[in-house]
Image 1 (cartoon, rainbow, N blue to C red):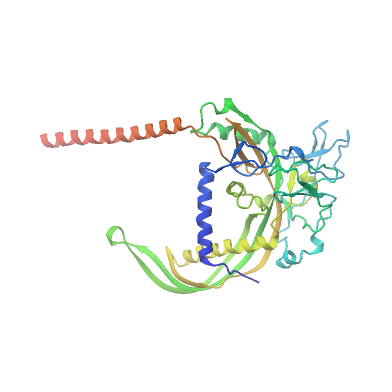
Image 2: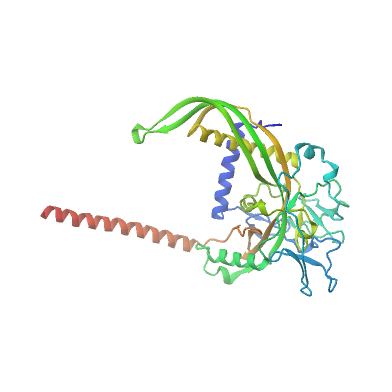
Length: 412
């Protein structure tokens, strides 16, 4: 049974920060940063430039026709040889309901759940990024920060095995079309954006997430307020009440990468349908990059408890039909906690416009897209002028109609 003990003030600060991050994502207003080893400014979400690493593959996924390496094909759900075109069907299993790690598993790193594959772990000495790679892959530049300080840990012993994988459903071609439609719809972008922007290739990445399920039981007692009336007669009517809030938590999702967990763009694109999650099979990763978790399950649970507290508070407000909570004493408890370590698909691309690189992310399951793009001040002022002109025109018409109405009324 887990006690949820975070303080209210901490949640208020975090909620305010998350709302600001969501607005920044919605309007593409991310601060412009610089790559660690270059002077080219970079705008938008943290990205992966995986050209220096070997694709994640299994030891036996060789083409039966030509012997080349097979890759997972989102369009068929099987494996495909990009050399000769041969295909191999995959028999994947759905993740059983309730499957996952208990809190004891997370705290004790239970041996029966550790990775048994022959993959190796590459670690960046500069930013701490960790990447799973085939045992035959060569170290290169870090896909996050560009550092060449890459070391090999030897193997993945001590790493927990993923509970499941959400396979890529959006193919590379579909992701390219989604990007083209998205960039064409940027109404405030410069008119020459398509002509003068250089689009980089899409990179498919399996990103690690912790996904929590739990049952919560919360006795509470407090003072609750409901706004009544309107205008000068509006006031808040308070009442005291106590009760019990029973709230099930399902698929509470947290990015399991310390490099990405505070990046609003990654959080906004990290919404998946877990009904299509498959039991972990390394063949599902073939041909794509795979990042290892750097936020362990115990740490992720501490963050999850804060979010659960918020959900419980909102649920109690709804139960009490309240707009505000003046005072509350609540003792949340969580039972039947299950933590799933999930690898989920993201397509990453970027484009250069006038010396600035803009990042774009596409959810590899749903096609949801977020990113940044350059703004044209000329077009912005033009739109403002059109809107202002329309407002002036409406007011002018209203004045004209009132004049005509008054003349008719005077004659009548």
